[in-house]
Every structure is written in C-alpha cells, then in structure tokens.
Length: 110
View 1 (cartoon, rainbow, N blue to C red):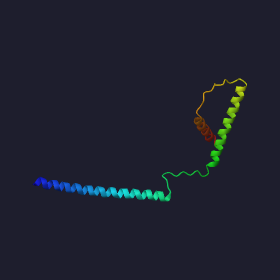
View 2 (view 1 turned 180 degrees about the vertical axis):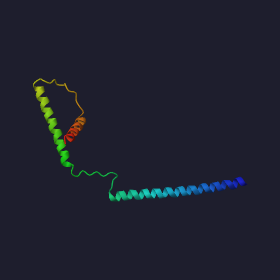
View 3 (view 1 turned 90 degrees about the vertical axis):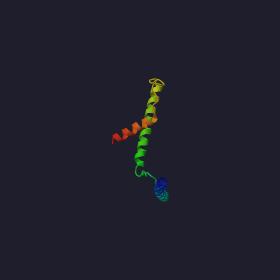
View 4 (view 1 turned 60 degrees about the vertical axis):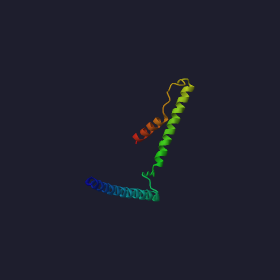
C-alpha cells in the first residue's frame, strides 16, 4: 500500500513539473512570435548595410580595373601581332583573384 502511495506522489510531482515546463515553453513561443512580428512590422533585418557615400569609390575602382584590363589586352594583342608572344604562353588566371589584387593595390596606394 505504501508503494502505491509513493508512486502516486511521485507521479503527481512529475505532472506538476511537466505542467511547469509546458507553461514555460508556451511563454517562450509567444515571446518569439512577438519578436518575429516586431521585426516584420518594422521591416528590420538581422543585418543592415548602408552604402551611402561609397558609390564614387566603387566607380573609381571599377574604372581602374577596366583600364588596366584594356591596357593589358592592348599590350598582349600588339605583342601577339608582332609575334613576340606565343598564342598560349600565359595560363589563364582567375578574374576574381585579379580583381581582388587590383582592389588591394588601389587601396594600398592611398
């Protein structure tokens, strides 16, 4: 008989803890829903990036890269036409790496 009573007492405690856990989970879910609604209503994102004032610098970098590419193309074309440069002497380089090097050089000169 005593074992049965202890079993029901433990069961009652477990149920009380489960109720408390469920209430806490419900509060957490409501909090997260409210946070999502706030973010959506304010049209906010986790990260805000502003590029005000950077346009002239980006334009300058792009024009510098394009002029360097044009200069290199003209030089290689004239060397090829004068038979100073075999057709496939250079290995093709990754254009992204070339652009990154140009940007680094641009900012290192300033």
